[in-house]
Image 1 (spheres, rainbow, N blue to C red):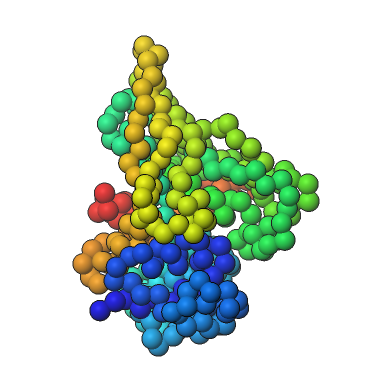
Image 2 (image 1 turned 135 degrees about the vertical axis):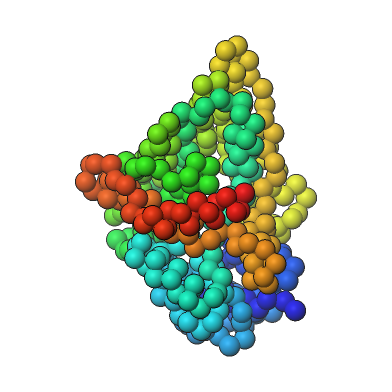
Length: 359
């Protein structure tokens, strides 16, 4: 029997990512969508029931799994309502706006025995999978410096909640969760976080540029995002004692989803731009092939977790750690001083245990 799904929100995240991915995974049935744009939803998803209230969808008696793709500040209250109604829950990134909200949801999910997961889909990017493979191969030696960036060129400030003075708005809360989660998956929790958030565009109300450094005993991981980079910068630049790895261009899945291509279409997840491995001793370069990316893997693993047949692909402990690093970066930017992620020893141990289990 299929897992009945309610999707809360049919804006960019819900329409572009969640709805097509849910429909592409066997064993999941998208049954209810919460949206104020009823006709637009039905034009794309004629088989679903549309309700205007996100809270009604979160507690709907005919669904088992609730996927929350609403504005960031609403994630915590809607997730809490769904968990209290006995639902399994997926929250789009960022998990929550504050660490206190994240802790509360983690505790509630444990208490209710429900699956709580966060849609950190960029773990299934082709370039990230390629970097994991390069690090596992050890060809770079001891990695000392990493740069990871998500950039856009959007010089005009748009009238949307992400660019207004609201909780969870700004580029750090939009793109930062991807950058942080990938870094934590590769290198674990940092000792401290340095950060700078800024507004660079004319008329910007919230941060549209960020540079955050995760400080480890043997390396620095620099996370960057900007709305004023037209191109030319590497997506990843990774340097070690034996050489470097450079990767240009983004994973193509988002562009294909924006174009309404069905997940799994021919060539899905194939990266047309290979990375470059540079041998430090000889200067010789060679290409590194990226494994195909596939965001469906998240929902396949989630389905198995809900059915008790597999591990949660993104655990509450991992999602909590991302929020802690996000919050530390904000404090660092405000104070001008490095900040330690505010995690208890128990939370750190849970993060480490879950990361090992999901390898």
